[in-house]
Figure (cartoon, rainbow, N blue to C red):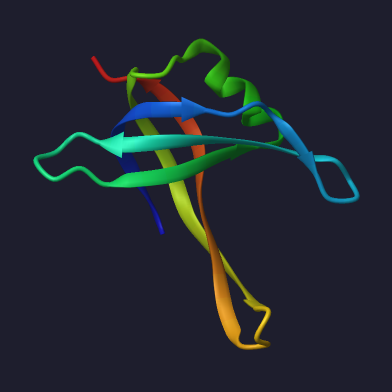
Length: 94
């Protein structure tokens, strides 16, 4: 599912290397700008982790990305889905 999100950055994490191939992931937290705000964790990956270098906590941004999901078996060996909000582009919302 692809789309655009406008939100306020509430937290930015450092870039982390994950997995055997040291894949780069940088997560950040968002608060939507609406009467009843929602909170989301988003991520940028690979070479896009530097996209967040020019942003600060409390910046209101416009982002393009997609919601991705993949199935797995949880600890109880039941079917579950891991979901992530992957961002491709981000700019200050003027």
